[in-house]
Length: 400
Image (cartoon, rainbow, N blue to C red; front, top):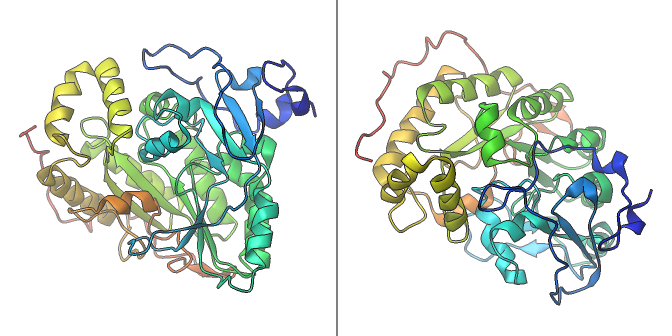
């Protein structure tokens, strides 16, 4: 183990740990070129211990900090289906161009674009601090959600291994938990999650909104591809754990065709997902600027359409969202996703806070089909014929 030799500008690397989850491409700068190794951050990050770079994460700097607290209280009046969250990382090497959390990096005086992808803050003492917080007499064992801001199973988790300690601390304290991730590194912790499910309600959700490998590589370059995530869903279900899917964001003109939606929901049903929530791309400030740069560069013929569809706001037009919600209902019915319960993003008039929940139907402890490790396989079916879907194929609005 030579990570300790990797203080900023050092060259040693723990290749085995770092390769636990290999991304498909490097971090991309706005001009589409692979970004150079970033300069050391000169920021007064609270609790900063050291900053680390490694050739295995070309272009990424990890800022190791000691946190004073890791439990985050959701704001009063929120519509989130949970009251507390934990984010062991800030920033994310998954580098999804559409990530709604980009703006949060500006609170650390980083930018919402390349810095979000390449300047990752790691709370190295997260599990230790969490145990102290959970031991307080005032803790009421409310559900805790992980993956609400940045991915807890991004690739660096292979080295830092923060999640096992966090999961154990929550389960040992009797605290229900739910996880949302794109990271196949979650498979490492399946035995631990199975054990935790004998102690407390456990929900697991996978974020997957497209089956087109090429498109996925373009818009979420640091993530495992769709096939890998589908295999993870199957592994979770085979282990007896519930697994909902957040099929967001659906990208206008890129992943919203009938063929794309049919492939997505059919693949999720075949993998055994216990529920799906789906909805259109949401472009809050910080994300909007970064995504629009990407569209203008990679799909210039769509740049004007996106500007008209989103106007000056964060949401696609109400007409588009109504059309997409209808197509989602049609293909969910075709592939057996009926009667799913849980937090859904399908309402036409989404509240901005709904996006921040990032939890799919069937993944939350309250809606999971398996509690404390016991239960049935869920309600997902797959007719393969689409005979139950009576709605005719609708054309996408041509207004845009």
